[in-house]
Image 1: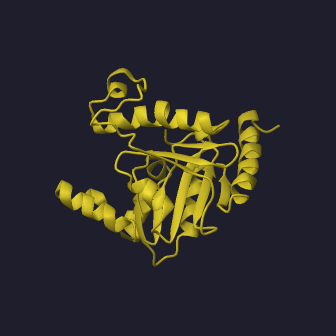
Image 2: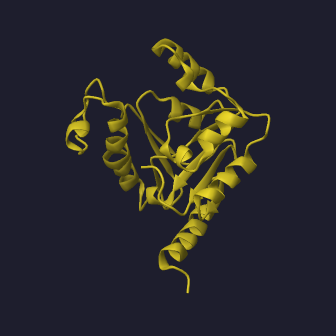
Image 3: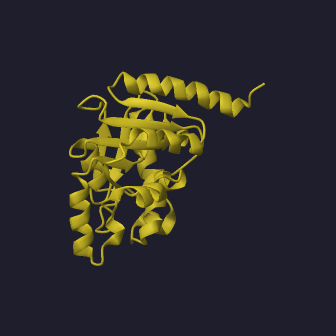
Length: 211
């Protein structure tokens, strides 16, 4: 008998693939991180220029290390000044393939993302030839309201610890729906469909990755 969690994830993954495809996303389910990495590399043309938004998920499956070694990249982490970093982020919006995750996803196939600078959300909406989204099933929620809540209360409150920002959630671990200068919740984008069709490709991973 299959492990109950593995079997449930397989079934949920198949359901979500259909929901995403109905919204003009390309969608795939991979049971493991290793399978997800292989699928991602299958979807990226070898001559593509790659960029990415801040994402623990693309690092956890090994995709970030691979593209840095094997593709031409627009990498903001090579910047020597804040001004250069911002310029590299702007250039990244015109890459061939943009890599990211999503802060939350509904069982109906909607993606929810919260950004501090807006570069991930901007790339999702317009610019790159294709957007590759790597998302663990731990990010799936029941509806749009709970997805937005997850993006705030879980993803943002963990992400802010990486930056050491002076926000209430950084100090308490609890979202305060703040309006302070350091907030990383400046842009909230709900992606209902991929337009043009197939531009956004979602790889669902049957393991907990990212946050």
